[in-house]
Image 1 (spheres, rainbow, N blue to C red):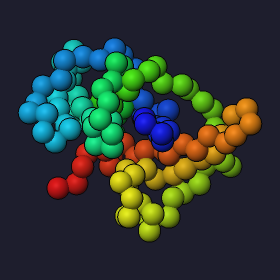
Image 2: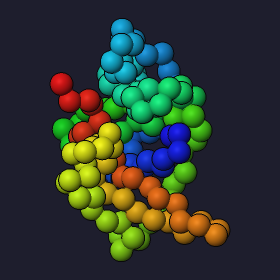
Image 3: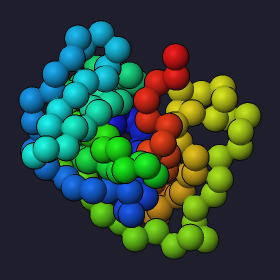
Image 4: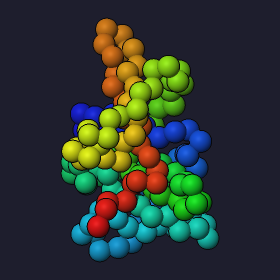
Length: 129
């Protein structure tokens, strides 16, 4: 997304699908979609941090079984990252930055550089009131 890379724990990903109709006012970057008989709360992270639209939808499930959809511009990559590369973000950073929804960070070697990826907490996706 933009110039930052975000990730979800693979066990939180329910499904990746093409974008679907989203219902709501559009004012707060949160909408509602339907996957069969299940409701999905759509969290427009692109809108919250940047201003782009998604072509695909990552559907994630939180700890209590609610589904959240995150629109993304391209098909997400699945990367196996060793636990030794994943570090907890300091609370001071999380409380001071827009990425308060991220809990961990990892650096993945890519060609001649390191890709920095922020791991999102599915239970923190909705903006706080």
